Length: 181
Image (cartoon, rainbow, N blue to C red; front, side, top):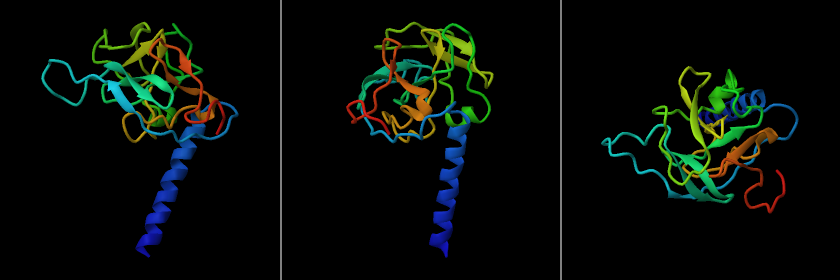
């Protein structure tokens, strides 16, 4: 019985995540894609401020199945949300969307970057905290990425895209040679 309950709990959790993803995925498109892990090559090793759990808002680069990508101070992949307009000063990800796609928070108005050539800035995110922007677009993490370098959020609902160091969207799928889901 205990095994059955565990399986039911896992199924319920998966269904809840799928519902949340659908709520913030925009229009059509099909479900998500489970990408593979990568090895951060240039992640921030914390600032000289003496410890802590990675620099909030610190961005660097890492190698992945998609090439060189932007990651946060913990090595987690950074994403754009297509409905966000560059320079609008706001995020279109609200409500349940924020649970699946938390903003990359800025530790200051001038977040630390290493290897990122896009223009870095901040806005006040929908959670009331300072959110990092690249080339005027808010950036996010994906709750479904389990480890640094995972790219499981890539292409979800055709509106979530991994960010390249120059600020462009990476729209290819890992290991598919340009295929789909």
